[in-house]
Image (cartoon, rainbow, N blue to C red; front, side, top):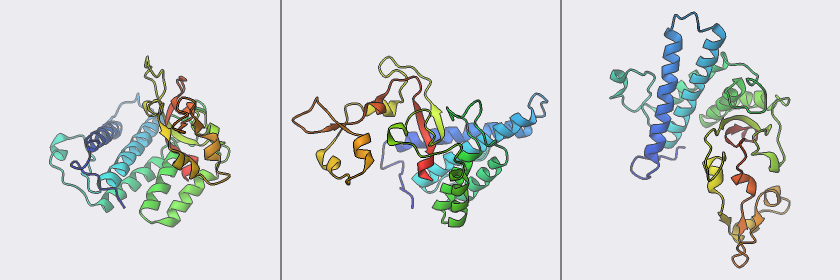
Length: 257
C-alpha cells in the first residue's frame, strides 16, 4: 500500500519528487556514461563499482517514489527528448525495474566496505541484498524477501544488533549503509540537521508512560528534562543532537531485516 502523497496535498512532496528524480538522473548519467565509454582509463573494477552503485541509487530513488506517489514516470535516460513528456508508469513495471537494477547491481558490487568497516558510506552487495529483501516484501514475494534478508542477517562478522545506546553511533555495527554529513555549521557543528532539530523537543508523559515494563527504549532513550519540571516532559537524549564530526544519516540498518 502506498501513502499516495500528491503534489496537491502536501508542501513537501515537490521537494521529495525533485530530489528523488535528481538522484535518478545522476544515476542514469553514470550508467550511460560508463556503459558507453571506450576509455581505457576506466578499469574493469571501477566500471563494476560505478555501475553497481548507480544502479542501486536509481533503484532506491524509484522505490521511495513509487511508495510515496504510486504512479511515476519510469525515466531511464538522461535524454530530455525521451523523458520530457514521459507518462506515469504502472507501479508493477516500476517495481520490476527496481528489482532488475538491484539484481544487476548485486553482481557488480563487493561484499566488503571500501577502506574499512567503520564508516559504511559506500554501497556494497549487502545494501543491495537488504534493499531487495524490502522490495520483495513489498511485492509479496516472501520467499525471495526471506532469502535476501537471511543473506544479510547471516553475515554476523559484519552486522550485529547493538545496545540501544550505540545504535545511532557512526560506527554502529547495525549500519548497512549511511550517508556522511560533511557540512560544518556554526550552530550544529557537523551533526545532521534532522538530529540537531530534535533538540528542545519533548515527549509527553502519556507517551513516556506508554512504554511497557522492561522496554529498554525508555531507559536508554528519553531522559527527564530539568528545564521543564512543571510540564513533567522528557527531553530526547543528547546523542540525537551530537555535534561530533562523525554524525551520519542512517539509510538502512540491520534491525530492519
